[in-house]
Amino acid sequence: MLVESEINRVLVVTAHPDDVDFAAAGSVALFSDRGVQVTYLLVTDGDAGGNERELDHAGMAELRRSEQLAAAKAVGVTDVRFLGYADGTVVPTLELRRDIARVIRQVRPDLVITHHPDRNYEFVAPSHPDHRAVGGAALDAVYPDARNPYAFPELLQQEGLEAWTVREVWLNGGSTPNHWVDVTDAMDRKLAALQSHVSQVAHVEGFADFVRSRFAAWAQQAGFGEGRYAEAFQVVPTA
Ligand SMILES: [Zn+2]
Image (cartoon, rainbow, N blue to C red; front, top):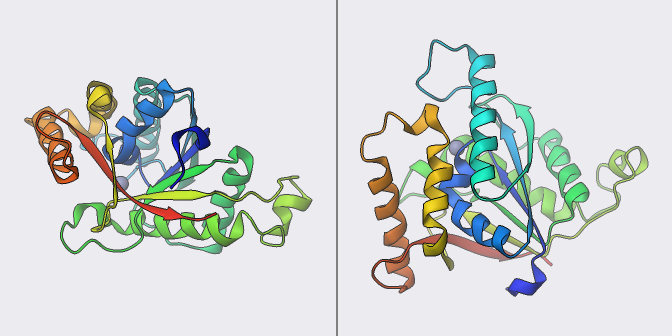
C-alpha cells in the first residue's frame, strides 16, 4: 500500500452527486488537511434523483451540481468536474473509459477512489448499476488506458496528454473491504458535506444519526473502538 507521503494527488470518480460524500468525504477531508490535491469527477449530474420533482431534469441537474460544489467545499475540494452522462443509464463504454482516462492524464493522481464494480450481495445499496458501470470503467481507465500511450491515441496526439500510471485504487461499496480510515476527526465535515445535498437528505428523518451509526459500525469492524468513525475501502495495487 502507498504510504501517506506518496499520496499527493487524488482523483475520486463517482456516478452521482453525493456518492463521494457517503463513500469518502471523511478521508477526503483528512487528505485536504495534509495539503493533498483532491479532484472530483462525476459521471452524471444526478438528474434522475431527488424529491423536488417540480424541477425538470435540467433543473435537477443544475441543483445537484451546485449541491455537490457546496459539499466539496465543506471538505476542502474546489476542483469538481462533470462529464454530463445521463443519470440511470451509465454503461462502461469505450467512450466513458476515454473520458475518465483523459481526466486521469490531466490530473495525474497517485490514488484513484471509485465504486466497486462488482455487485455486493450483502448490502444492495452500493451496487446501483451506474456505480458498477463507473467503477468498471474507472478501473479500465486506470489499467490499461491511461498508462498506455497507444490507447485512445487522440488524447496524446490531439490533446497532448501523456500516459500516466495510477499506483493505487480504493474501491468503495464492495463486500470485501481491507482498509479502514479513521475519520473521527472529520466526521462533522463529512456530515456537513452530506447535508449539502439538500434535495436528497433534507426530508430524511434522523439522517445524522443514521450516518453516524453506519460509520461507527465500520470503526467497530476495524477495531478502532467506541466513539470512533471509519470509512471502508478495498485497496487495489495498480502500479
Ligand atoms: Zn450514486
